[in-house]
Amino acid sequence: MHVELKPGRCNLCGLHSATGVRGSPDFSLTTRNPDVMISRANFTRIVWTESEMAKRKRRKRIPAHAPSASDAAIGNQEQKQENGVLQLRIYGDPVLRQKAIPVEEISGAEKELADSMLATLYAIPNGVGLAAPQVGVLKRLVVIDVSREDLDGKPLVLINPKIQSREGEVVDEEACLSIPDVTADVKRSEKVAVSALDLDGEPVSIEGEGFFARVLQHEIDHLDGVLFIDHVGGLKRGLLRKKLRRLQQQSTDE
Picture 1 (cartoon, helix red, strand yellow):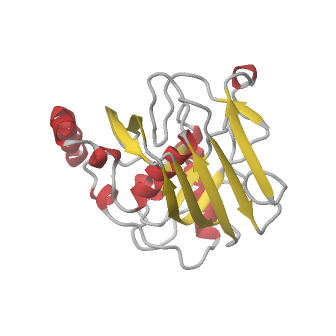
Picture 2: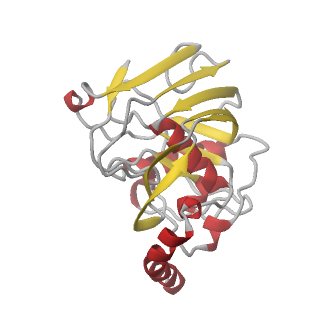
């Protein structure tokens, strides 16, 4: 399966590239469950090219089942709006700086949360990733869909994801839906290997490269209370200070 990402803004909660995706990133996924995540195969490799995505029509995904009321887990402060979309937390909200709690047991609450997060993600043009703390839930859960333009693609739901290894370094521009109107160049590992659980509690191993590796690192950072601006040097951070103070004040006022 080949997928092309259109040039322009890409939101990974939301990752941003002023000129689009650089290079041809790819990833592979292995799992014990033959029906999980990306395809009905024990091993799937998806390669992004720059020739096919423009031919595909945009489709807004609908969660498998409608989200219901939030559970009573610690740190679960999600606020649902219309159509199951959750309220995004903005810079200055303390929840974005707290460390998320590992999921000990996967229940209906986690599945409902994943559906609500996907509904929120698909409500954002070109959004490709979202972490639970961004919707006020301190659970180690992220949703990612870098192939949302592909009619045959499926989203990733990763529970308790952990980066096991890193290779190389690359600098690219990032942004975040929780820090609107702020962008900066961020150095990330070019390749990462990640372990996690899927919604069935099955272990999965993921190898990400290029853009997908950046998405994984960005989202996993959120689970530890780390924002992309924390990777920005002092001089550039100083230039962003005015915008950050304004966002923090707005968050406090709300």
